[in-house]
Image (tube, rainbow over all chains, first blue to last red; front, side, top):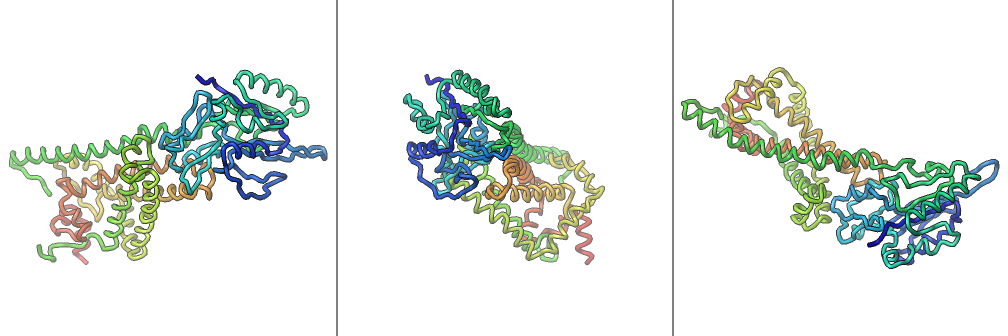
Length: 265
Length: 216
């Protein structure tokens, strides 16, 4: 049995070199995309069906000095993923290692997961009608290798291992960076049942454009836990009432007839 | 039956809108159910050669579902206004109808006060079904073109689309049955099929409306 795994993303050490993006594309055989400058030195606006991880760059100005804060985007591999809850064909599943994967055989590219991921990570390829996102390099991990992004990271911003060990490293690093960055915090532990990718941030999540407390949205709960399992039964109920009436009207009519009365039509 | 004994109940444009919506709604319903829950999808998707084709048909029918009422509206706007004027002239007789009809529905004989062109139940059906249809179309287009709308709106459109589908389908079940196999429905099917109904039926079921029509 595969034990649970975790990736610790230490954004304080990230230099924004984007080698993780390249390594991901190389290992997963993803086409390069034409892109343009978004902000700072960032040329990727969001994940796409061909770009499963990218770095966003955030310029922080303080006392006339500029500091670059980096953030690595990819699937967080939540313990309780909204995408999996939203999927109408049960194509999304969890592995023993804690990863969230899309079964491409089952995927129909409907985009329900795209709309319901709190970070909008999965993306649909409109031509293939399939949705893609980071697989956590499950094929490497299950064969004893590190994920491609972790393997290639030069400044040592990415760590891969057992959750306890990763959390230990994360907490030690948090204490360290808090000296210079009082707002530093860990991100992901309390999100969506806990994420497989744990982050050390140097600022509030909002500074990176991230939701502070990502949770299963109320709309998804209404849709999946109320409307679908209970609401749908109103339809057979209406049908049953019609069938009941079909027979009861005829039975009552025949009783009335035998009594000499008649039913108006 | 002599033509003199029949009165016009629904114009050509009203019947076009009605039957156009019947076909598109049912196809939308069955293709849509294939994406509603995994269990329903296993039953409905194969009928349309898989989920991908089902959602393609769903989108084509969605356009028809939107165009049909708009065309009818363009042809006969006056008729549309007359319909809604009657629906919103909801009076005591309509309340009495709604209170007594459940008994009539299951076959008991009840005295129902004279009704206008649309009885209390038909007025409710008009409101609920039309509201559901408008919301279904709007939420559907938001989900279809999700990139153009804020994420929270797209997310809420999924449950709204589901709730409206359930409401509309319940109304359709009742409406289809009451317009065909219910013993009291009598001429109502022919009103929507041929456009005319028997005068004595009209006088009995929609006395107020019949008086108006025959006076003029």
